[in-house]
Image (cartoon, rainbow, N blue to C red; front, side):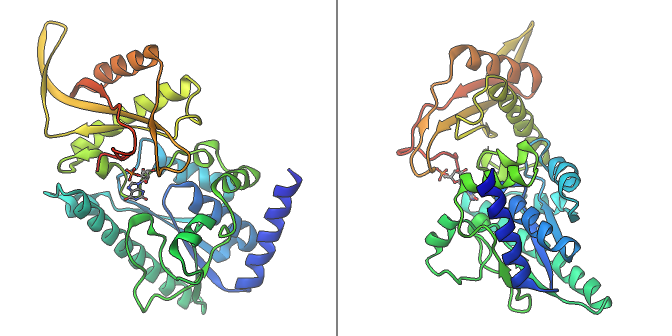
Length: 325
Ligand code: XMP
């Protein structure tokens, strides 16, 4: 639309005015905000921007590929894809406490990003340049929440503090006057893939907080496979924009008896969680049609061999939270 084109033009002009001939880096999480911020800045400064995608191996099925392939194809962004799944997996080994999981993931994320930023700085120095700016997808509600409009910290996305003293960049926050729906429209205007622009909220610690118990590569595969089936059925039913969040939770320390074919099974339960909400502060469990629940249950049990039972979470927030951890 006309106003969106205006917003793009104005934001592009503002970024150019702020950064001049400086170089920039941007961390991509796979989420909407960082993707739109990066695409916008790329439109303003082209190859002066390098994006770092820290792939912690805790994303949903297909998401890393969407960043690496589709996002790069539509924007032409210079992308460094850091495949750090093994490192996160090792750091999470033996950990079951939800807050410890979050802390470890936040800490590793910063470390990996930092290492990558240092390498890029070395590369820039070899070309007689420096990296001066860090692009962040801070939205207006984040600005209000953090209180201080100049607070130079990594978005609380991963619930961790800022970058260390020797990696001080000036912040470029092209979305800081916008709300989520405006960011999505901006993303569409910039031609980003629908799967990225309309992505549901997803926690920074990813699938790690959707495995109740220790996170292992095998368990990640199980919850990822169940989640993919669930999201596909929700999408086919045309409900993916109506439902605030829908996902699978793996109860990794619970097993129950079942029967499939002529065989007794002893497998894991998957919890189906689907909620409606305006802002995640409160949420209501979604009244999904029985036919859809039936299709999801049948498909998950048939297609994910480790799972033999699907239960539906009918708890609203409060008293429940949206996530299980
Ligand atoms: P809860 O579970 O507290 O979640 O009702 C509210 C919203 O926040 C998301 N969430 C997180 N997002 N890092 C994030 O970036 C986190 O550690 C985290 N924990 C929960 C959750 O998905 C929901 O949208």
